Length: 182
Image (cartoon, rainbow, N blue to C red; front, side, top):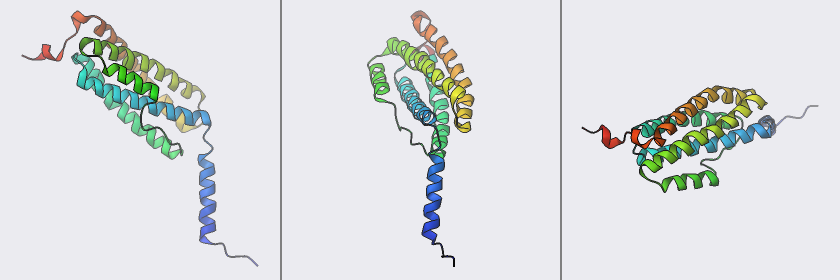
């Protein structure tokens, strides 16, 4: 004689299977998603700061592109993390917050140089290393595909940041927002 299976037992079994499927994500892949999320938040916060404080029109333009591009990447990353059952941070790490705080303490051309160097060049070099490692080593195909897809954009951002950094170092060649007014 078979015993009737209760709806609760079926639901509990389904949740157990779903939870087990989510737990299959390798720890390194989950860590990548968390680190990438913190980096996205850092880029966005630092670039929003640049939109307010930068005096160089090129710095402001770069900052706006970083906000736009990293917001899109962050949305895609959040959806991927949710699908994989990984809770990602909702902001930068404490160290990254400290870097943004230090950046906010500067003004004028000094701010522009520091932003171009730290949020532009250094942050993108670090991000490229993180994404390259995931593109090469991620075991989850979706995580690997996300890293591979995002990597060329980050490399392009680094090139833009290096060019911007060169411009920011040459104070005489910096165009400020005041220079564009009639």
